[in-house]
Length: 455
Image (tube, rainbow, N blue to C red; front, side):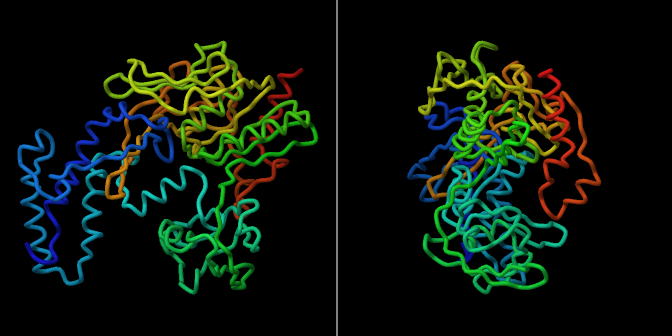
């Protein structure tokens, strides 16, 4: 083997481990640690211990059994490596090539939700799913036509807010490094986040002027819920995603609005991509009774018909598998709350996954009406598996169903009241990233529908 050649045995062994885990995901049932999730990632987090024979890069052809033709792949990889060694003009980044092979294996499944993560990417995924991390506390997006990076949200009480960063600021540099058009994930992982107490010098373009603002990094809890009570006693709760912190933020919002005399509630899930299914389950249970649909909140089924369901019973949120195996140690949970008010849920074509599960549960219980446009239609869930080297994979493992048994994948939820967003309104507030509620035609229609039910 050439000195700089890829470690073919290790690569093939890793590919095999990934392939077997894709085919054997049901084995995770025996060591179920967290609930499954929909959206950003699946919550079944499993550490895969690598046997000594695989870890040292040796393997026997009989080990692989049916599936990918590993020996043929090894031979072709060797041929391609020889071509690279002989003809490739530039320096070969061996780590990048190796990671690309694993990413390619997952991409070959033709499923956008099944993904390989390098150790650095996997750490970032885990942080994001928990809803807290060490950074500065802002949400950044990127214009994919121009590559421009700009701030769309600054979390309340965060280092970014205290330092004076604002929504709409265009990010030009971090610590003197030009980040214009930099990949958003690289910017977040390598430049924005860092050790607690360290300083990030953020240079932004604001009003045509470049301003450098030093920000001290600290622990940040992602602000996934925003809420207010309007003068007519209409409660409004915006949920931007479903993270580990979202449930308590949502409960606090509901409690405070109830204490202030809320008469009706609009829950805004527009553009909410989903997240941790357990958060959506717990939030739905906080609003719903348990005397309908056998208390079911959501159920799942894999390709063999095995699955589980979350349900409410005797003041608790419970978990059970349909074949009696496995468990989820986070359940049962206490839940004695129910909301007896008219509720509307705002949705659009970017409301997906856990958002759809939450909205579907409320509608199946006849506890809410859906207003807006048809949701995205992601009714499948993923499991996340960690590998011994710190990398990991996210694999699609099952369909999920609303309490009535509706399978919404590639269909979505049709609104009870269809209302398209006013195009002129959208264009007017495009650069503000937020349409005022008193001009938001979808929100206003939802309130009108709720008040009509009270008459």
